[in-house]
Picture 1 (cartoon, rainbow, N blue to C red):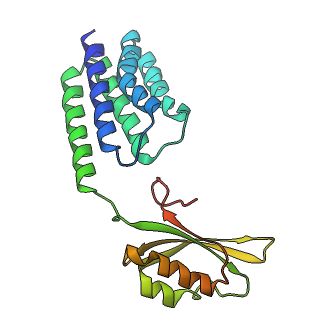
Picture 2 (picture 1 turned 90 degrees about the vertical axis):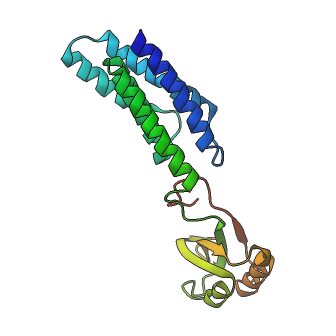
Picture 3 (picture 1 turned 180 degrees about the horizontal axis):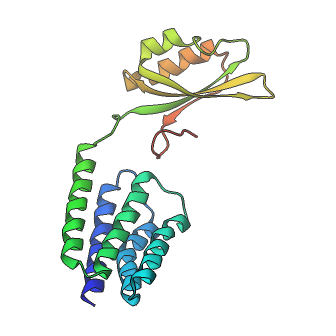
Length: 211
């Protein structure tokens, strides 16, 4: 019972810390509830199994639960799930002190990483979509405009549209001055023949896949 109670406390603390570090990106309430319950459930499963062979199967089954999460998550979400399971496993196996120390250590690392924006690529990155006719060379058609208004830009995706008569270009970029965004779009409209242009924030993800 001590192991299960400690697992309950650890689960609640993990869920609470996760809400703090995810305020900016947002989080799902059901995922938070799952994090709070997961360590105690895993600990109970391990406690109910006595033999080493059965314990190995139960541990494999517990980790397999990651596959059946209702919504796909980021690498951070999956890491938190494994972290919660590891704490539950430690509590279920009787290593209560280890579980507490491990939880405190990892949570401190998470908070430090969140506060320092470790691994971040900076703010104000934008996703830019431009539609151009097929007769324009999309590799260099906007180079002078980009050099004037953008501090960096990367062509992420090219796809054909309108029965192959147009290209839709998707860029990841950063403005030199946010106040010049209207002028920037106006110059792009002149160049692409006033076809569709969309500029917005990059979707919440790991940043490697754009919609």
